[in-house]
Image 1 (cartoon, rainbow, N blue to C red):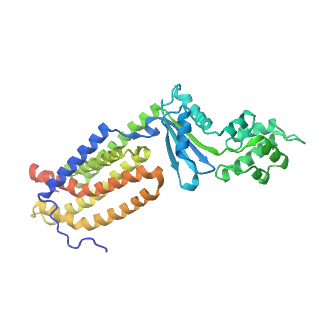
Image 2: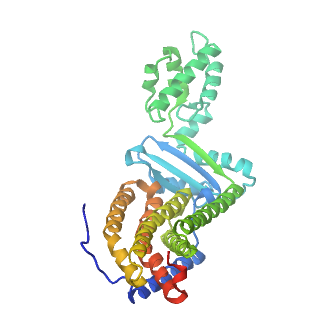
Image 3: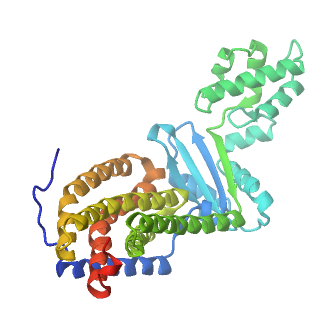
Length: 395
């Protein structure tokens, strides 16, 4: 078995414990101050708004896209590259109520997505649309079927079933090729598309530089409800952990100290997210709940060793016993946390912009979750023993 420390005997629970309690208190105060003064950079999951996901044929220029959207009166938009560099995908986010002249949650999402698409069209594409041409990279299967039925190719009409089959074949080909048709010459090679229809589409259709992948709209009511449910989830989890530890160790003070350590970890992780202006989305909620689970697991390992030693060495001073128990589990704690931290660091470095807030929050949570198991939860047990008596902590 790999060991970081052999026969460790660090004086972690002596006077130095007050330094760690003071450090933790300061970190919590700073985190709460950040959350109250700076607030959170809420994503549309909480703030409400519209998210339009676009895929471009060529590498998109983020600043040029931003300028075009702001020039169209869409306000201060948030742009984010999705996936790898070769994916050429951009997520456009516009917060609820940030576009002048739009009111009514029922229609805002569709109107904003329409404005986004129009703002990003090239002058050539606009001229083509004005001339009655269709964009094969944007048109839906139903609209393409109707257009084909209304525009039979020269030399023979297309029945409704023929139009439906051709529209389905073109959309399937487009989907199989990452959502974009690159050149008009590809039309004649699509199975199910006859040469006459292919020639007609080459003349009457354009191939826009991007395609619409998805449109998501979240109203303000849904955002507030999600925020409320997030608080329920965090506090409900902490309450469940309190009850579990209480029953497991037969003393409610053990549960209380463990929950104080968990609140310490979650508050500091949330404060770091606020400080760094990371987007607060449902991913952050998942990260905070993960931190709760990870931290309590580490705390339970330390508490279990303390309980075992209490049964074996009843005459040993409680502070000395806790210090010995921490040293006995220190190697396991360091190795476990280190391996988890390596995995999260890899996610932070290579997971892309979408996973950056999640991995950042987890990194902070794992570090402080490991720290709090020793220097908050266990230290609080020692403080309770010294000032309230053995009956609160002895099992």
